[in-house]
Image (cartoon, rainbow, N blue to C red):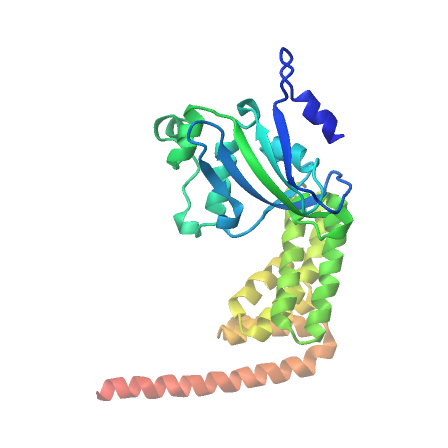
Amino acid sequence: MVSCNLKLKMDINSSEPKIQKKILHTGNIVKQFTNGSRVFFHFQTRMKNEENKIIDDSRKMGKPMELVLGKKFKLDVWEAIIQTMAVNEVAHFTVDKSLVTAYPFVSKTLRESCLPKESRRHHCCGVTLQNEGIGYPDLNDLLRVPTDLEFTIELLKVESPDEYQKESWQMNEDEKVQRVGHLRNEGNELYKAKDFKAATDKYAEAIGMLEQLMLKEKPGDEEWIALQKMKNPLLLNYSQCKLLEGDYYNVIEHCSDVLKSEPDNVKALFRRAKAHVGAWNPKEAKLDFQRAAELDSSLKGVVAEEIRKMEKMEKEKNKEDAKKFRGKLLS
């Protein structure tokens, strides 16, 4: 229980608790907290010294803090104090300096998450940290002279693990594989509805999850091959969407990826051929079309028509190029 955690955070030689709570506004919804619960809260951080200075305010940052419990957040005291609260409660927590040594680094991360990427400071190595600090004078002061901190917390919402869609980093391997199937189905439905951009996003998310799982396996092993077989249909679906969007080089890249492990995949050959036409690589397009027709005789008529149209385009292009060349000679 959290109340036990708070009692543990006592000085063994002192009766003074290291966390003191004062309720400013009583909450009205009591929620059960478990590992994986997602909490949303606003916070204000004040230094408990002569300055009594406010150093952070989530409302000024523009969004509430979001935290998933049990995921080893750097400032574990926040997990402890949040779990003593009810939804819509507002409370002060005065926390001993020994429990908030990580706060300057947490604060730096939160501040910079609100900035454009180009404005963010680079990660500090040990030497830079010693010589220059972490880039914010007030946080450098807190690093040099640690002090107790007061957090004013307003708990906005608590979601149990089954009430929200987990982020990829929160999922175990089985959950990721299951999510890939859902994403593929969602992508297929969006494709049928002709929402190709949204379908592409679903397929891309699923591909990304599989690639994360493949990184943990040795290429060529049974588990890696099984994941590659799951990935190939998603690559083909993604390629089809990109083909319809006219993103030909992306199609060529992803169909080629499929053909590395499945060199006789007809869909990959045919879609890559179409992309080569769009990117105007007629020689490569013809080879892919012909190979697709060799593997699937039902495509012979379609392929013959595609090659005929391509050859016609090629003749027209050659005439146009010759005309331009003559124009240059006469100018």
